[in-house]
Length: 402
Image (cartoon, rainbow, N blue to C red; front, side, top):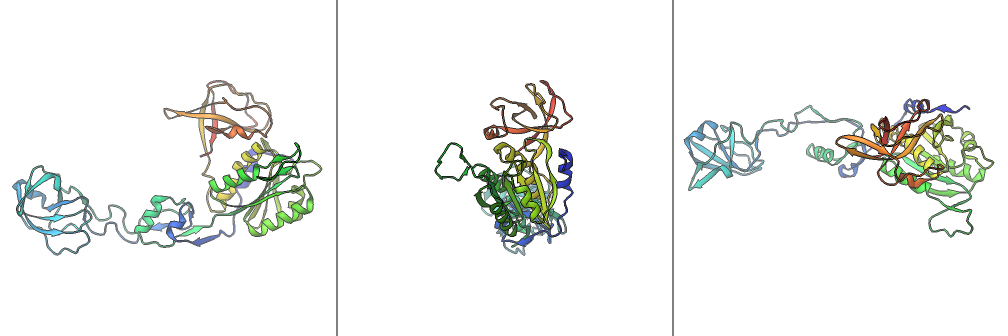
């Protein structure tokens, strides 16, 4: 299978259709961070009647010129006041109280002086001051939150005001993580020789999955033998929506992941993309489940996870890729295009007066294993395989990771 143009691989991901989305209802506060699976439409006006926005006195605006008004009643919040405002009178009214019939303005307590059973008007206010009109917050039938919204604190508050106890949400996809390699050591495992390396891929993938809306299932490191990989991937596929592996997709004697995927009857969407880092990327599907086989080098697996795994996590929640933002930036130092591939190069970015600038200070040159290049104020500078080298002042695309 020939290596794909990067853009073609992204189009394949975009065009995947999910047949059956997993949805459930959850208690409201437990929906924070989940994706809404239904439109939220107001079933009433808010407020349902004119209410006061401050503590003060409900009056007829035309009476303010009298300078003195009689306090005829008190109107606590939550009460069903029967009294109405008559000419020359005021009703003491509190924040959130219904505005009494006959009133059209609320004069705040700071603007009056109480003298016995009267108020003296010290400073007038405009007609309708501090009166919340019917439907000011939202109107009955208004669509307030759309399907596909990531639920944040404001959405929780609005749904609470609508008495929505258990919204319908898309379930976060379960993503199983498997790192392959006989040389890998788990956290805390004692190193016996210098050929062994500490596994970091499975942990950074777990962090990426959590950050971008999935539920990680950590299955640890397995050795480079075909039967172990086959059994692990089969089991992972049975209990998750996405299986992500690192290592074992290149062309070495012990790279078995690509063979296992085929043996499991998965449809290979693509294998091999003209992209740097991570050209030995493989994505396959079985029904509405996916296997994403990433390269073993840490920087490669991180970048390709952002490019391919994150969009699949979002797709399973009926969202377009919206977690990563592509913006324009200005180069502050030259960039040498080394290969005819799409490249995602770690860069340092800053935002100054509304404009993004990038350079490569602190970023090391070398292999696709340099994970420390992701530290700091880092974005990924994107160049296509058709691009040439860049000069200071050139405008480039950068992918923001937040």
